[in-house]
Image 1 (cartoon, one colour):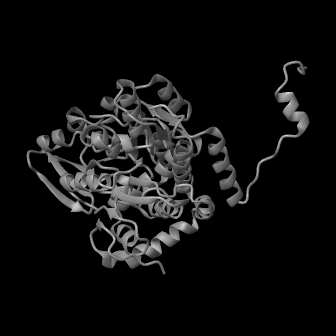
Image 2 (cartoon, rainbow, N blue to C red; image 1 turned 45 degrees about the vertical axis):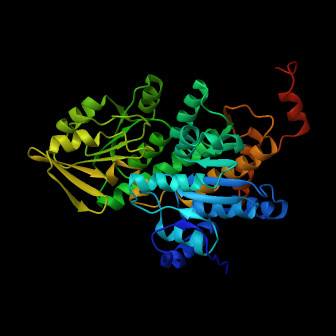
Length: 424
């Protein structure tokens, strides 16, 4: 058994560590690609001596990533990337059992959240690892004296990539960042299958509502919205999609969903879920139009998609907790139920993505960190994709672990695909 002594950190209760260790081990069984990378990292030590700070959702899957990075030689500190996403037993186990300094408590207030980010930055990381770009933003705006030490960073999610590309455009980004989110093995699978299942899981755990026969409104038809819409339909819901992009709206129609404005959807929806990465998707006029008992939730990274301030103003203080992660707001003679304080419902009320999905995402994170170390002198201060060869290798390893294999081109086929004169 691995034991840590006098490891720094701030977690809810170290007594929770035993339960956390069992859950970390359970997740590890379903992360075969990361297991293979960990074995190689132990042997090759590609991150030896590299100081790293990882600002991620502190879950069992993240714990296995952290262990992989540590075993690859990294000097790692972990902090939470969302106040409601931490699994307290996992955080405790990372400290007690694996010797990884961890700063994360489920339900921490905003001041504590940023104190934890700053504790991770006190480690003076050479590589940052983000889910939402809060760590990098703090570094680039408040801790600029540390920028010279940074080799680069990695970013996990769509919202963070949007922020980082805006920073690069304005010349604020001062080191290269690998967009894990843009790899095919991340956004095609994590966003669609992971978010699809875990968001529905979070809504059901919080409410115990029957989705079959309900009208389920999905705001945003990116990869996350596609996943949630398909899973809600699979459980028998009548799904409506709202979009701002006519191309995505057309795709949703062709996929068999009704597409309309939120103004039109608000009076008929039973359950709403926002997945856009933008602010004010559900606003005062929508709350006012909703039917009695409407349930509203968010599965975008930040709690800005639902205008909670406007909701509270409409309710005039008539608010109460009715279930864990369910708040009732009374507007006139009707009730609107907000889930998970408007934060990521799949992590606030459930456990986030299944381990088998995060296996691919965190394979990208670990190999992205290795790539940064190897290519530190050749990368510009921009947002870069994971190399396609790495992406394909992760897919191959995952297929292999699942007992599936793809064909290999014959020499004749390779020649044909590379030629121009072998037509009909």
